[in-house]
Image (tube, rainbow, N blue to C red; front, side):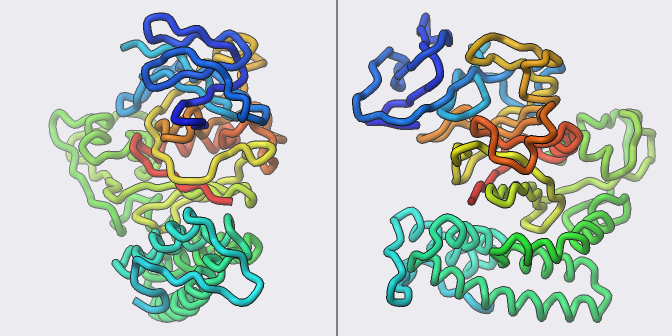
Length: 389
């Protein structure tokens, strides 16, 4: 959390020695230069900070290991670092709603404008997600009224496109249309109507070794390795294994491998306890998740910059390696890059399966261990994450 230009870390007293933060318990306030400070009298609320995990299994080569970070309400503790249709044109969105609607805050208007610009530029899925965010985070405002009208028009278009694609037997086009229809639907109950068919189409189009959208066929050459191919195509090598049904890291000369080439993204809908993985904006996978109690999981846009296997948790009351009963991070950690307002948040597994589908974490997004292991294989460093209510 930022307060008067400084980053607040809660849940412990910290001592800074040679630029390294040592977490002791209580409050710590430090600025960009790492200087200790005092807690402003205007700061309120009970915030919980923690120290970022290290990995017993090791960080993915494409991940980041550095940076001291902690977060208000986050479960990530910070470790010392080792060195066409409905929708208007973008801009100047009109947000006047019916009598009785509230005036939208600037952030809502900016999100509405960004969504409408994306639609005008043909980035349909991105635009729909931002309009969905306006409706869910600022309901009852004039911006939400405009966004709801845009989404209604887009739902009508997508329904027509889905019907036409189904009649033509075009799985790829139907998948695109149903993805858009899902993003344009505010209600979880209504959105879930499309899930089964989206899962089936995604499995057929992407999680099989037959040619499909956002993919190419690579013929294995001398010197190829899975990790090398992952770096070449910008995906974790685990994704290559899952798509091609490989049980080991061994590949053979002349083998034909399907390589995913599109951009992976993540949409988290907090109050629905859902995480959706996208490929070039299209629906790829959906998982049930847990989120922060007292609405501690922040909304906004983030980027994954840390990927850890079997992370160690540096908690407020001790250091707990992977496997320790008090380690709440599960089998994988996908950490977000710090922003101006937030640090220390991420997505991780949990041994507390009953917490999935509830708001009970310190602020991070929790997943079943089996699900986060699959997610870890799908999302590379640099993946963008949009979190909305």
